[in-house]
Amino acid sequence: MRFGTDGIRGQWPQEPLTPAVATALGAAVAATFGPRVGIARDTRESGGVIEHHVAAGQGVEHHSCGVLPTAAASTLVAAGVVDAAVVITASHNPWQDNGLKVIGPGGRKLDATAEQALAERLEKHLADPPRASPSTWSIEPRARRIYLDALAAALPSGQWLRGARIAVDCAHGAATWTAPQILEGLGAEVVPLGVAPDGRNINRARGALHPEALARQVRHARCDAGIALDGDADRCVLVTGSGRVVDGDALLLLLARGPGVVGTVMCNQALAIALADRGMDLVRTGVGDRQVAQELARLGWQVGGEPSGHVLFSDGLPTGDGMLTGLRALAGGVDLDARLAGWQPHAQARAAVVVAHRPPLRSLGPLQDALAALEGRAVVRYSGTEPKLRLQVEGTTADDADRELQLLLDAVAASGLRETPG
Image (cartoon, rainbow, N blue to C red; front, side, top):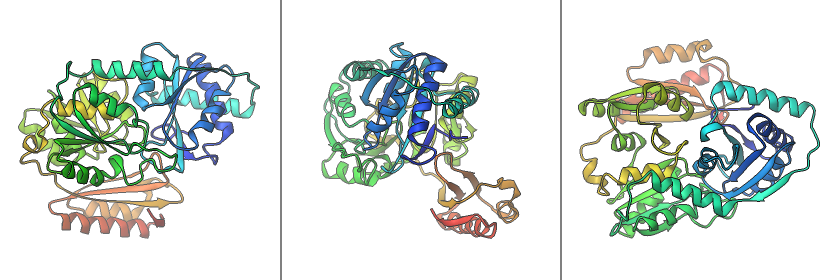
C-alpha cells in the first residue's frame, strides 16, 4: 500500500515517491473525480518538478495553485473551482522528504474506501502508462484570494486584533505569504519569522516543530502571543505572551465547545479531566485527522484534533488549517497566560525507533509483557508517515514516565525491532 496516514510520502525520486507514481496519481485523480485537478505545493525544492509529473497524467487539466497551505487547496475544491486537488507536501517532515495528499469531493481528504479505490486505479496506470498531452492554467492569485476569503468568513469579523502584537513563524513553508497577510487584515502588528524559504530550510529550526524559536522572539519583541505553523500550515502551536509554549492538549482546551471534543489516543489524560470539570467529554480515536473527522461527523460535534496542533472544526474549512486554529484560539482573548492559569498536563515521555519491518505489535511478547506491567497510560504504534515505531508513556511524574518509557524501549529491543535510534 503506497498510501500512509496522510497520502504518499517519501524521498523524491525514490520509492514510493517516483516520477511514474506522481504521473499515475495525477491520471488516477482525474479519472476518479474529474479532469480539473488543482495542484498546490509547499516550498521544498522538489515541489516544482513533482508538480510537472502530476500534471502530466492522462486527462489532467492542470490548475496550478502555486505555494499554498493544504487548507487552501481544500477550499478550491469545496468552492467548485476544481474537481479535486493534489497537495505536494511532506508537512512537518524534513526538506528531503515530499509527498502527495489528495483532496476529494467537498474539499475533504479521502476516506479509507475512496483511498483504496484510488490506489487501485493508480496501480493500473503504473502497469500501463498512458501518453498524455497536459493542459495548464495558473490560478495562483485567484486560489490565494479564495482561501483568504474562506478563512475570513470562518473568523469573527472586523479588525479584532487591532492593538495586539502577534508573532507568526511560518517555518519557511506554505504559509510564508498568506499568514502575515491574514494577521495584518485583522489589525495586528505582525512580527514575522520563518518567511525566507530557500527550498531546503522548511521546518528547520523554525515553526511548529521548534516553537522555542518563536518563544524567544515573543519575549524579545514583547508580543502578546505567537503562532507557529508547520510546512504545509495545517498544524498550529501557540506561544503565550510570557513565552510559554502551549501544548496541543491545552490548545484543544482553549478551543473546546460543548458537548465535547474529539481527540486521539495520544491526548493527555489531563485534557479529559479539565473538560470534565467544564461539563464536557473527550472522545478518543486512533491517530490521524481522517479518523478525527469521521468521529466528529458521527457525533455531530464541533471541535476535534490531535496533540500535534492539527485541529478540525465542523464549521471551519474542510481540512485542518493552522492559522484558523490559532486565530480561533486568540479570538477568546490574546492573554493566553491568564486563560491557561492552572493548566498542568500529566508528565509524558516519548520516543521513536526506526524499524526495518512491521510485525503486528500483539505478536511481540516482550513488548506486550512490558505494556501489561506499566502503571501509567501508554500508546505504542507504527508511524503512518515514517518507518518508525512511536512510543508514548504518561506518568504521575516525569521520572515515572521516563522510567516506564525505558522499559518499553528495552522490550522493543528484546523483540528484535530496533534498527537504529529514531
